Image 1: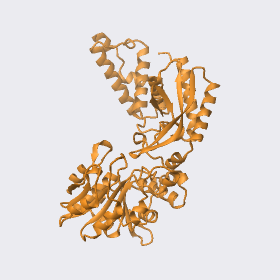
Image 2: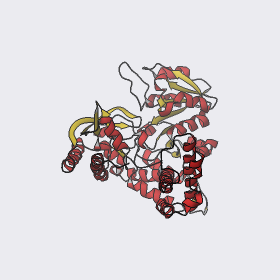
Image 3: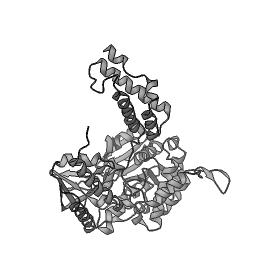
Image 4: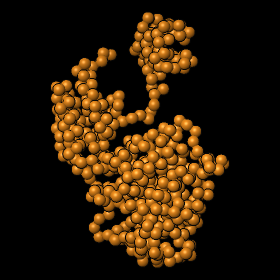
Length: 475
């Protein structure tokens, strides 16, 4: 064993190898970084020799130097590679939380790039030549889109809820229906957020029925807020009743100290109901009904970046802007740029620019034609794939519209040597990951959620996978 350890080449010897210089150039790293990777690989080999698990080239052989440098190159590729990477969503879930939810419109992307690569007036008033407020940028557009008196943006809707409760109801009571004590993703519950904020939760009604009178009975001198939480990620059907926004607005207005706050969750600016898709309320309609304040997400039905948008009466928004948490929860310039770009699309009546809406409104027959195109491509280039177009359902996703299913067509894909799970994994770990779904032991691709520019990539990936299976790389 000692003889083997002595025969491991020195770091200096490896550095003199021309292959080492090639690895440095190919990996685009410094000599110091390359040397560190070599040291790590040599240490690994020493450890394996000592514990008797080494099965690579024999120390002292000509192959060992090349092996060490090759392994260091692989480590460089892994170490200096982005972990956040593009994937192709062919799952059929439009606002897929695990895949980043909403894709940004080209308007938003262009604005982000412009702001990111340059200085900007983030907190600078150009007209006055003095310090300005970052709140004003998106606020102007949010007011225009919702009809609210004022608005502000924080980093997500859970943060918006936390800020509102902390600033307006700390050590006070907030009345909420038992049927609206929702849990959002990651086990975050409205009740838990309220507890952290310092507000006291007062539950009223039952899971399936809560009336206006239930709220009214609980209002007292310590009540700060009546809160309505839109059930955007689940549905209660059957023997149900709930107090509507108009009645709760009127109830709160009868008590000078009580604010009516509606947490809309998803937040919709474009009316999908006219396309017979869901029954989500429009933000501007809730504002017009007299809600003192509302909050909603930026990356769900709005189709923009992750953000928590707060809109409502100016006197209330002003309190929130001055609260210490406003700085803790504030968003950066790129989020504001993305949100501005998204809102500009709405205000110009160009909702079709927003990818989420293109996917939502895409006709099933168009999805079918895309699937048929992929089948035609495979027929000419692969003898091992078989595919069939079948009717199916797409989902909105992102904790939004849980009862809505969109008619679609899927490509049921089979391979001669891979089962559904193996095929799913092979495409998931491809150079550009392709995410489909398995249903009833079938691997399915739903092109409702894939951009047309991604279809050639999918086709080429399938053919490349087939080629690799026919001619596996030699080890």
